[in-house]
Image (cartoon, rainbow, N blue to C red; front, side, top):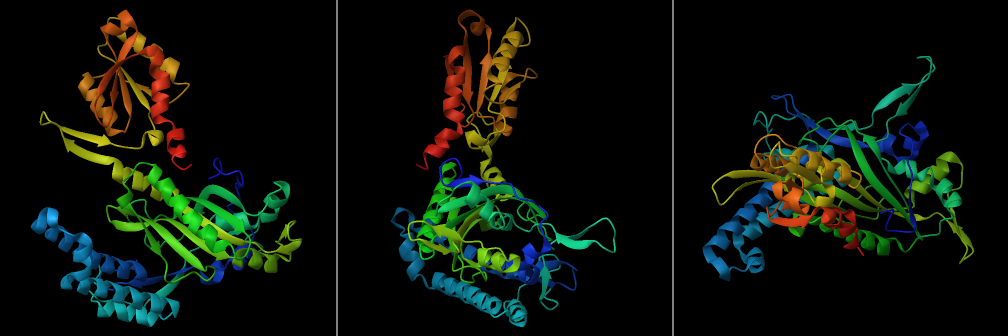
Length: 459
């Protein structure tokens, strides 16, 4: 975001900020999750997620119907026509839309009784106990609070930040003035955020301490929807550039908007447990800067030299979870395959530019000067990228170990290396092997694993 855009700069804001910051942002009064308990299992769930999981099961039925029809009709199968004409598909689709519509209407009206009634009407059961013995739906604030001060009596309540965005807004003037920024411009940061998730689940998908990557893009009022559409497409393009199949991603537009937004969409990824939010793109209007301006008494406005007027900019936000992105990459990359010789292979097909180890150097045997030559290659290349040396077990087993941790390339040093200064380079995904000169190693590997290849897809 920063490297490819001249008008976006990065900052690192504080984790602890004045409590009024969170009053101004609305988090003190409105940052809540609707929770419901099952009396039999004593487990607590987010009510909206219970309903969404129920809808996902209905959508899974649609997918299964499509799969069965595709097998039945073969090459003549028209998926689009089937989805719009098959009575059972239409019934499932109508049901999913009905449940989603009722849920959104209940939350927009803040009618928690209606949310519970919907759960009961749909016969949604506890995943643990299988019972429908539910409590009332209640709101829980998600911010962690602590006290700051030398004496307990005088200590004031402060909060761990539940998002990194507010640190950008309170630093708006600092960046605007010192960076000599002109509208439109963006401020981005990567940092820790903390949420008192009642139910942290699905491995690292939902955690109480997580890493966010956010960018707030400040624009002239009236142009926000144009920029909203731009960042939607640019961010999706970034995800596609990583090389993961495009069908793994989809947009999900919000029907229920946050109090500060006039448009919002999620980029969802197909995790092993279904399509879930990976990144959010929101048009936040001027809510944040206006609210901080009111609470601080400090003008947070931009002076436009072209129109000779001052105004509070509108904001378009992109917010992506770094941990969720890691989970998306890893869940897609992990692969178990059976080879032609009947053996099994576990391989982690991580995009090359993300692989933690780029190259493994392997002497064919532990004698005849081969380990020394392999060490020489490692010592030469480790300045350019992370390398690993391994001499234990057969070379086949060493290949498998590197496949399992996602190393894109393995270089094998053999007796011929000592004669003509060439090595065998093996590619992780195809297992194809080529003979190349040691002098070409750095150039060839750099050209295949560098992030520049990925970034150029965005131009």
